[in-house]
Image 1: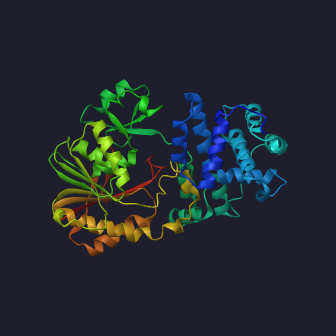
Image 2: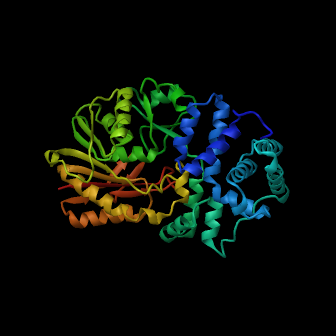
Image 3: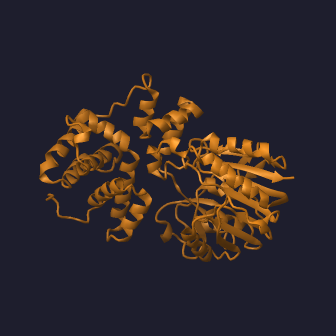
Length: 435
């Protein structure tokens, strides 16, 4: 029995979610959304639940390193509930300046049964007495230093260091630890960026995308959401969409379309005239495109179930523009999908060949003089520029094409966007033209 009977406290809810997702290996965003839909917490408490749940999930390695420093009990002997309670308390003490230490400790201890409350209380108070955490020495082990400092698994740290070097890897991982802004794409079929920005308090123009806004607060409560004046889309994804260069009257194909944001953006660039075919392997997800298009007032999008590796013969040589946004390892979106921090990149070794297979199938749809755009939300060369190199070696009829999107100039025809320089999700875009 716990010392607190408030079953609706945000801390208790965050703790229960942590235990549940770790046992069931659920995706954090899906578990959190489902929990918030069914609870009766106010807005402030909902924000606290989200901050605690995502925060602990993002900082597991760092938090466990600190617990191991402070506890005389081996980590393997700490039960799941107690371990997550400690993580929850330490996260507040280490990363949430607005919560007074005494409140963080008392509220966390209240989540414990009596048999563990003393242990948890002792660890949390030991942290406050000991001062700031001492991270591993980077001179002795750069991998351990990066892993503990940024809460990323050693295998991922090693791979990033091999690709980008130690200093750049540290810069990239530091950027992934920042809270990403909420970015929306303005529905230019119904309004302009200037007009919408004037109606949304605190809205700021995106630095690169010409049709994006950075906004604050709950998206569904912002001006214009119910009227379909915008949709959520990261700036990198907006840049990718506009690199396609879709125009009114075009025939456009989106090969791996779900959840639909790139299809929406291209339809807007087409001024909702022409034909846009949105395909995806997963039938259940296509309803997201249909409902989104309806809210945004876009009626040129045709959706269908289709494996991107299997040709549709009737579409050969028919498309002005083809977007091939392939399934990828996702290591460019660590800031939004914290589970990826702990995924071994070796698990994605088969992806480049699958991606290349989808790209080689998609290229058959492009008419002469047409455009093919290949993109991923990862920052690994084997899924990005190396795949483009392999493709061009097999398809001499295609060539890389320089492009500009807003303030971004890409003379080489391809670019890896990185969060520490642009700043956006990690993302790769390559634009090709068929001769």
